[in-house]
Length: 500
Image (cartoon, rainbow, N blue to C red; front, side, top):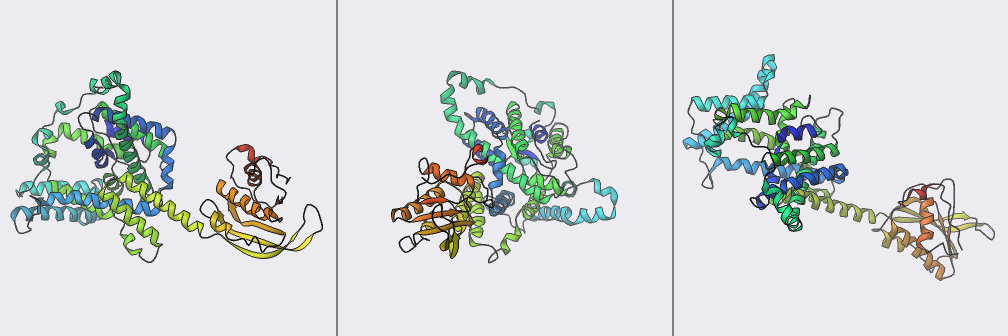
């Protein structure tokens, strides 16, 4: 039920949703006492965040963070599959009957999925109706059953009770009293306890889903782009539905989504919903049969997913991209494997932003030339010293900006030309005013040229009601127009402030 709801509420056709390991990790901390309440609150938070358009913030995630995310996710999935090849903490020997069957079944599944069935589909059109992954798992399961290979099946791992089948396995739909009773008795205390877990679960699920959306947008080049708003809202509705059926809750499954996309999914929304529908049908009607599937057959499919998920091209980037980007890829990969996806993306994005700000702060410079000046009073000055600023002026570059000028050695009239620069924030405005104040203290005058109108007006506001007589803003029809001010009225025929 929850998989269908998430699929229908989401956006891209080839997305597959279900219980996610990252969300399960959050659930583990709140199991029993908090779980029922937390999953509903997480769903509500996702609906609110999606409705507020917070999903579009995923655009701020830079490409190196995306590369680190997929690499870390591939390693996490690989580590999960390796447990199926171990016994008592050690890898099975390839020469033992169990080890030979395990490794052989895995390799056979991978060969059928990657080579055998695709080759057959090229020659037999009817074979194209069967996805390679499904055909590979079915064939190896039949062979394992016929030849009686000593392999663990799904029923062995999950228990025969899980695969007993029948309508009795269907969950009951409803809101148990354990969810709403604590909110009635002690609402603030209950909210204080579960809110951190709910926020974490909502953030982890949303981030992984949105990153998967971006990844698949790049892989499936069909001219369509996924809607981040619908994605987050649909996931929140799905998690609420999951709570009503006793489910754990989850998000987009990158491995299954890749399998779906590579198998030809994406034609309609049924492509993404089919996983949930067929899984439910299989558990009810064919559970004993599904229970006989060897676990390592599915592990073989997931190993192929790991191989296709990992960005192998990132290994060839050494010396070809900035060292900061290489560091961010490694950092995000490490944190994803060691700790948490949401934390990895947050750390990677902050590191990228700081690195970008630092790099931009070092690019500001100035060239000195002579220019013609027409002062408000007095004759025209043909050769006035002009500082032609190049590079962005913002909080990170204000100190470098202030070191450009030789205030004591400069003549009585100078020009600061911002044609090659742009003023971004309040720190930049303060830096301009501070430079003008330094010249004014020595009885000199500064002429500011090619500033945006809203920027010129804000300079007067920051100075406390108007510009001093030693700070003059020149107005020209060729002046740039960019948004430093937040209020719309600053952009409607803004007059340039006059010096006192």
